[in-house]
Image (cartoon, rainbow, N blue to C red; front, side, top):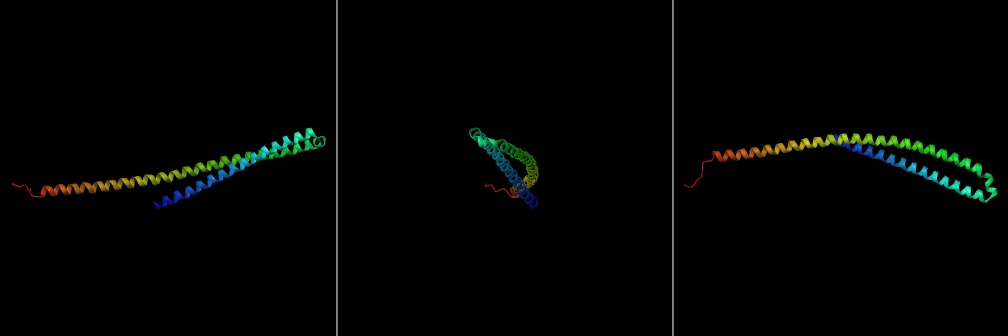
Length: 145
């Protein structure tokens, strides 16, 4: 079943590649979420500075607007990445199902081959037993008299 072995290797590789894609996308999502937290922290810091210094408070409204726009962009990016993660995970699931299909084919083939070998061995043992029995039946009895 060399052909099936090759297909199993191919699908294992494809499955690993798809899993790596999911991991990369998860890392990207995590990075975006860290940027969002950083923006929130920066906004809070600027708010504190603006409350303490009049000059800083003059530009705070513009800063807050820009911060909100960046955050909205990051949220849109995160949602897009989440959608891509879901699609990539479905590809992982499909690759896993395909791999399992070939693994089951190989497993069934190996089981049938083992059964054939066991039947051959049993037939050989039965034949040897019959031959031994026949020899004992055909041999003159050597009984001391």
